[in-house]
Image 1 (tube, helix red, strand yellow):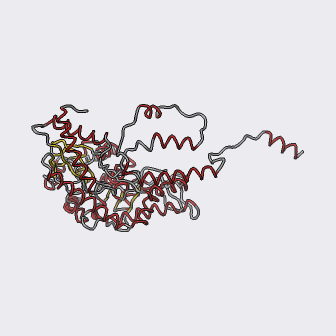
Image 2 (cartoon, rainbow, N blue to C red):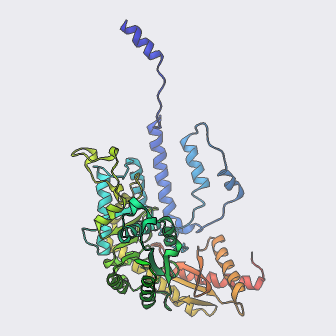
Image 3 (cartoon, rainbow, N blue to C red):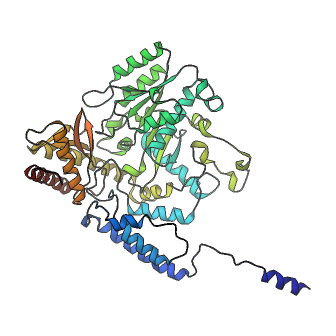
Length: 498
């Protein structure tokens, strides 16, 4: 009877599947090849174009429908090699200076790989990855001069780090329980203050926090594009008299346009006097705090109530990883913590660890810490500080090259590592000069020479070079100036843009 039941059960069984390989040896061999290709890819990055446009057939490849049946992994990797790896954004290249990216590092890439292999969810719990996450946050506190008692969390990047800090500021200064009653119950409308050079993520934060863009008052800047302290003081006084509640001052430790750094010490003092939260957007320059020759530029950041910074910029971690630090750990946790019945702590076991999701918006969190941890352990923070000093010195070197070239002009003097300049163009002004400089920028990109961005400073359109790159050398900057001059002359001579 038992044999009959066993036979019947076996006959009715459905074959169970897994995503693990059928042949681990084949996967191991392919994995070795992938690592070898990756080493070659980074080793030879200088020999490739910074960027190149994709032909039509490559773009069409990414319009293919959902795959229904399997194909060999080696074939899948071949498609990645042919269609993805040869058309990068370019930010790991030594002549990529668009926006403000960071240029990654091989050790960090290994960390990302190992984090994916281990597969831990960093919502919290009692396991090694969670302890490492907290350790990296502690290291960031040390870099910023924050006390050990402060709080923090790793997030996707600067925009989310700023949102975390500003959310704590809103809840702390609202005067009511915002989480329970909502922003509509706030008695006096809150006001946040920052310079007219603030990153756009702060507007998004105001909108997401239910306060609206009008709650963010932009304060004029001085000739160096730093916030005008007296104008800020006057705005706070004016708003109080008008029935608003000043809640938060946002200081820039490096603006995205020019790298201008507000007087953080003066802002901290004013925030204390006015009893408002002091948040520092340090996604551009907070990490200057670890640079021996330039740390003085961000003096006062250690007095902030909260700081946003980006390890995927000047710590060159592979995308993505940001960090929000909050001086008042209790206020930080009270802003986000929720304990549902399925996430209650236990005295022992997996659920006995710290719940990291209590400090942000994500319950599911990737293991971002490992790539930062490994690179810091390999190189030490002192080397990263020297690399920051190196980039700042390179920015000033580029500024001297531009000043020495009659066909180019600085639009704003470099303060740190961001250089804003333009090709003069004899007799060209306004839109015609903008069109010329835009064409120079596009040809530099299309020819694979260098990647620049553009912006408007003091009402003048200009090209923008952000040297946030550990692979950049001074001869790369020499090349940039030569090629910019050559292209400007060529475009003017032809009389037409490509």
